[in-house]
Every structure is written in C-alpha cells, then in structure tokens.
Amino acid sequence: MDHFLYRDGELYAEDVPVRDIAASVGSPFYCYSTATLLRHFKAFDDALAGTDHLVCYAMKAASNQAILKTLAQAGAGMDVVSGGEYARAIAAGVPGDKIVFSGVGKTHDEIRTALTTGIRQFNVESEPEMRRISDVAVSLGVVAPITVRVNPDVDAKTHAKIATGKSENKFGIPISRAREVYAEATKLPGLKVVGIDVHIGSQLTQLEPFRQAFSKVAELTETLRADGHDIRRLDLGGGLGIPYTRSNEAPPLPNDYGQMIKETVGHLGCEVEIEPGRLIAGNAGILVSGVVFVKTGEDRQFLILDAAMNDLIRPAMYDAHHEIVPVKEAEPGVELRPYDIVGPVCESGDTFAKGRLMAPLAEGDLVAFRSAGAYGAVMSSEYNTRPLIPEVLVNGDQFAVIRQRPTFDEIINRDTIPEWL
Ligand code: LLP
Image (cartoon, rainbow, N blue to C red; front, side, top):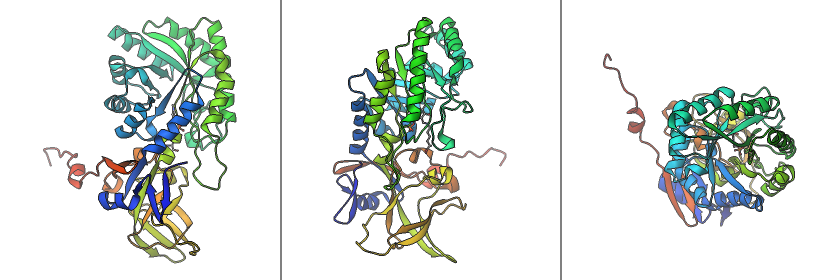
C-alpha cells in the first residue's frame, strides 16, 4: 500500500495534490511519501520482532539525505556500496556503527574512511579485498569487523541483470570455498570475523530462493562455528520484490519473509541484518511528468513526455513495467486509447511503454509513473544535457524540495576548458 491516491478526481501524495507540487517545482520531478517510506520500513522491522535485528536500508535504491534521515530517525541502519554512499549516510546523521559496507570493489580510500569514521562491518566479497581491509586496518592500528559474502549458487528467479547469487555472478565467494576463506580471515591481523553475508538478487517474487540460500547459510554457520569461528551475525541481504502492476501476482509480504528467516536461521541465535531497498522506497515514490506533445504516427499515437530515459532508465534497461496514471483522474467510462509513451531523448530506446491504454491525454496534462521511488532518481543521468530532475518529499500536508533542479549554467560550468583552447 502507498499514499498516492485519488481524491475528488485528483492524484494526491498523502495530503498534497500532486498538481500543486507540479505548479511549484515544474515537471518532471520525483515525489516521495514519508508515510509510505516509514510504513515499509516498519513492515520489515515488525517482521523481525522478537529476533535481535537491524534493518539496513540499501540506500542505492534512493539515496537522498532527506530519505535517509527519515528512515534513520525510525531506527534504520544503512547498507552502502561506495565511498559516496558512505559519505551521504554519515552526512544524513547515520552513526557509523549502523552502516554496513557492501560492494565488490572497495578501494583503499573507502576502507580507510570507513575505518576512521566508523563502520558496523564490511561485507567482504573476495580474498584480495579481505587482505586489503586487513592491511588498511593494521596501518590505522584498528581491527575491522567483517563478514564474508558467500555466493550460494541459488537461482533467484529474477531478471538476469539483477540476479547475484549464481556461481557465474561476480558477487561473493563460492560457498564451497567458505571454510578456507574464513580460515585465512582469522589469520589476518587486521580483521575480526563477526558473521556471514549473503544477497542473491533483487525483485524476487518468491520466497523459495531465499529459503534455499538462507538454509545454506544456516548450515555454513554451524560448520564455521565447529571450526572455531565466532559467527554471531547474519546479513541476509535485500531483494524482496514489489508489485509493479496491479494485475500480477503480489510478491510475498515482509511478514512472510520475516517468518521464513526465523524458520531458516532462528535456531542459531544470531543477530540478523537485512538490506531491503526496493520494498522500502519503490512504492514510496512517483515520477511526475508533463505531456509535451501528442504526436500522430503512421499507425500509432506517441505521447511525448518531458521525462525521459535519463530520468527513469528502468524500462529501457530491464524492460521494466511502470504503471502510468493521469494526475487528473480519468472520467469513469471514458474510452481508453493505446499510446506509445516516450521521452524526448534521441534514441528509440527512450520508450517507457508501447501501446499502453490510457484515457485520452493532451498537451500540458500531467502523468505519474508509479513504483518509481527505487532505482529511479539514483540511476538518472544528464544525458542530452538534461538536468537531473528535482526530488520532493511529502509529509502529511507539507512538501519540501529535497533536491533542486540545477540550472544549465550549473551543469555546463562543471566542464573546464584546457588553456590551449
Ligand atoms: N544488498 C545488496 C548487496 C545489493 O546489491 C542490493 C541491490 C540490495 C541489498 C537491495 O536489494 P533490493 O531490496 O532493493 O532488491 N537497478 C535495479 C536493481 C539493482 C539492485 C542491486 N542490488 C532495478 O532497477 O531493478
């Protein structure tokens, strides 16, 4: 459930008419709902009630500091995957001991900064990374808490580009090599092993792959404990999917996911961390865009929007489906028409939907892309020198711009011209 609903024929974000926000900031823009973010965070937090746990929001999904602060104030930790994300989390006031650091390519600088400022744990993805973290920790005279991310070779049954738990994927170390890697970790002077990490993919719509992966992690926990390792924390990653269409079968709810976690690893007495991103932010955000033209082609009508693939890449990149709804609700009974919904970027791939049935729309009308809160703004670019679009956060009857639209000057003045020109 989200808080983007029609009232009196108008789409509202919580208690604010979306049209009012558009009038104030111009289109296109991203709009997030505080109540939805908090509701989704709480769904995970409640699902793990009774188990020592920390919900570490995967901030790659939507990383505006206002979103981070909203979630951090509710008790969330953060999962970060770069020095930039780490800096954002710290700037948003997240304490280092609530930040876990994932990612396959951690640099010396990133490790040093995290160790100096504070870190809950590094989720180590390879042996060379493990050695590097130890070296940096030793050079700083500290000990780095680590888990090793294992690759359980489980099919997450999701889009190939976002599956991470098969042996052909670059993530984690093969679970078959886990014992030797943990044995090496204990010999490295700068490391303290605190647990095991796993993450098998994103937009999972079934619990079974999670169950398989977590069962393998449970088994490994017992093996490693028997080998003498102090495994007291399990980071089970993120990945629970969200419904993108109203018709398709709804993915499992956080509560069922929490129950399955308790069933698979509950007997081990470990502290549990999870790293949900999409389920917290996805349906907490919409992308609002205006119709620039309705163009008649040979055999179809194109709805040319002011948002483009650079603002929301998911349809172009993963053939992702996003519901697109009019901001002014269609009259009941009005006949729907098929539109190819496109952006102004100079690529045919800049297509959001083909033959999408919509109530008739005209120049200047506003539409909203639903489920755009996760992997929307964060994956945007300035391709075609299109400014990154504003982000707006709604809270009850108030809204605030949480990222301004840059001016053209701000964008082009980032270039520097060599003196020989
Ligand atoms: N933890 C790790 C280590 C991850 O790599 C990810 C996502 C998450 C947690 C959060 O997964 P979530 O709960 O959001 O599924 N851009 C793609 C999704 C990429 C996901 C990458 N990793 C998309 O738009 O569908």
